Amino acid sequence: MPKSLLRTDKEIAEIYQRHVQAVYRLCFAYMKNPADAEDAVSDTFYRMIKSGPVFDSEKHEEAWLMRTAGNLCKNNLKHWWRRNENWEDHAHLRDNADAGTDSTLEAVMALPDKYKAVVYLFYYARYSGEEIAAILRKPQSTVRSHLREARSILKRKLGGEFDA
Amino acid sequence: MHDIKTSWDKVNPDAAAEHRMLNEAMSRARAAGKGGNLMLTRKKYFRTALIAAALVCVLAVSVFAAVKLLTPVEVAEWLDPEIAKAFRSSEAMLINEAQTTGDYEITLLGIAPAQNFSRLMVIADGKPITHDADRVFAVFAVRRTDGTALPADLQGIPRFHAWPLIEGVDPAKHAFESGGGIGSVQNGVMYYLIDCFELYPFADRQVFISVAEASDRMIEPYSFDEVTGKFVPNPAHKGLRALFELPLDQSRADPARAAELLKQAAANS
Image 1: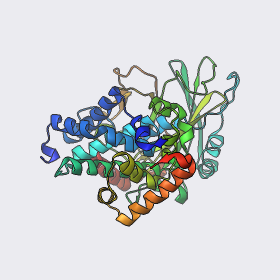
Image 2 (image 1 turned 90 degrees about the vertical axis):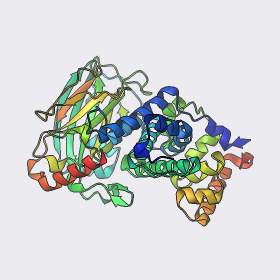
Image 3 (image 1 turned 60 degrees about the vertical axis):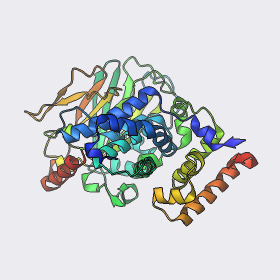
Image 4 (image 1 turned 180 degrees about the vertical axis):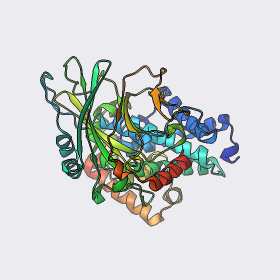
């Protein structure tokens, strides 16, 4: 694959189309509303265009985008005005995302931030623990314990019907 | 049965959002690469924060008539007590400058410098990106001129964005860390508390905050004039807008720090 500085608009658009939904969902999990998720997504792709990482494969491409998106979201969430927010505050924006009042999604959104990327990559994107560790550059043991703790929270919130 | 995958399938950007996100990323990259001849964005945090913040903590709406605007201290108080402390300090300024745009009145209620905000320090990538000496807080009120209250769910009212502008600094070529903001409706009035990370070093120049209606096409409400270094209303922006000059204490200007911030911002753009 070419280095991004040499990528044409068409190539950038192709990468974008391949991954925008996955990146958007991860950003939504962190930011909890479409407006902030959109900003995080465009920021992620801007970083990709500007910094020009070389990708070995589409998997590598996706891993880079996921890690960058997660880091950008976590940075944004450290700001004091974010700490004052919670999921319930965004009922109106949440509905705009067509997410409705899905209790599972609400429970995932309410998870502590450190679990969100792991949960998303494992349960939605269907990565293995080893792959997630590589994507997020975390030890496998950390990924495993985050998954275990997140699963326990979700089970507590959603009851015995939680389908891991 | 709860299934995370099925739930997450419902979270999708619509086609317009997909187009917008790609367009913004590519336009920013082009602007950075070609010296900023495209009119785009350095104010992500502000824009982001206000869109989100507009939905925060919507309180009961009552009849607007004769509603007295809250003071900056009162606004800050229910958002963060530490910021309220800043607005009580001797360096805080009450301003109460109102501008009318369309059917709305926007009032800059006051500004205050940050002080000993260790708890409110913003850290990104392991490094602090806020410094008390640089940081300014501003409180705005937005209400309708006909006296009707803003609705509790904010349906049908414009989304306002706010961001700082500095005389002589082309925003298309400088991406500051910026800041953020939070807002709430109380008694039919929307209040915004804006956190500007990097303004005091520029206190020897004219420094503004633009408050304007969001545009899906990312049209800037004010254009930078490269010859004069001033900002002028952009005729392409058809929405509501107001520009407030901040009366910053000039003794807090720090040209060396300003030069450092400009260098960083140029590299980030």
